[in-house]
Length: 291
Length: 303
Picture 1: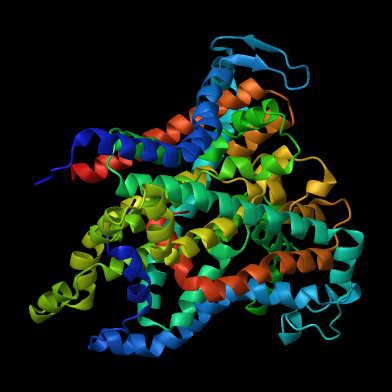
Picture 2: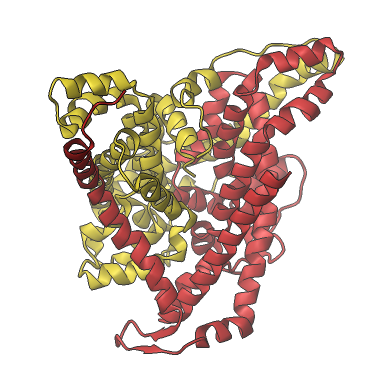
């Protein structure tokens, strides 16, 4: 049994814990909690960075948001991007995980290299690869007889092109989590099912997939959040064009805050985006637990 | 975040990498055996060809840059008259050395501070029982739910009010408290057997001594994982430096590369060379530290 006297010992522990936690907590307070509160406050204000003028405007920013057709379009574009990127990326990641598990070890290394390549470099290089006349992709397509495509210069092809480069960059992350999920499935499940006469398709359908559910939910949430944060490739390559076809939410926040000097409106959009992502995350978690 | 199995982090790598296939037999498997090599090669090519083009083109002279792209052949990827002119131009005319040095210093400082204050609080959360511990942990994890992009406007205003706009401090201070890193290190501290801590305390060690002399050396692999993941993150920073710096002397490497691309007069060979400088050192580092990277990513859920 514990014979320590609680008082002196516990107090010393408490003080040590406090001192050890303090630097991190101060950092979080200044750079996460306070900005979060401030973003909410700012959403109710008209804030001009140049003049420093700051005035309460109540729900004005949110009223503007409700009737801003461009904002609606940016949300729609972001959802379209999400639908192009996330399902395909996750399906590909699972396929690659299954392949890598049975394939050579260097293949996994190759698939992971884009995840340690910076977003700027990936954007810039793919931006050049997509070039209609001098780009590598059209010459690859030409090699198999496909006529040259406009890619980023076409409002139909711009968003799928961005989604493809993001899949290329991010699929390694998702693959790693699928690999981790796959190795945590006990091997005797497969052996038992195989002795009962299950074929490999049944093994996948009735053992692998159900046991990867936790991984799928986790990846769905993180990939969704990542998708709704997309900024760099679009900022660098298409700048939202052609004709707003790739204007996404974070780009619109950036432009409002740092180009149009509408800090309050930018904050209001940020709050809407944060709430939207929060609702999606909580809902996915709930839905996955309910079943 | 994703796994409560406390042994998982340390075992993860060997389990992901290890174990060759338990090969089943049957008609599907036999047809797969035939298909496998082409599929593996196809997948590898999909992930590698942009790098082949990037590396080859960065050593190409200006007048050769577009010549062999179409039709595609081995010449598309191999420079026929390799030159270092592009790199020379970047370092002597575009001050790339400065950008590289800035990014390197910022990344090292970020990593050092992140690991120091992150490991302290992770140790407290994992090894000290104190009232409110769960609350603190939830508060830290809550920051994961708020993407930086949704608070960048107010973080920017905070930096400005602190008088840190356009300073080195602005480039790393917001990033040194990292919930993913804290979570990762906490998981590893929890795996250390209690006897180690108890013995040290019986010997008269203070909790700080236990943290510094006993616990930190025991989670060295996790520290390497955290350091590398954070280094990559810091090296990649683009949106934040774009917002918070104006001074050309504070340009970080990603900004420098992006400016080659958004310049009025786009010079492809310089973009390739800039991308090469910004990428290849990190890839080489990754090849050496791959196991730590995999562990760090999978354990923390860093994305």
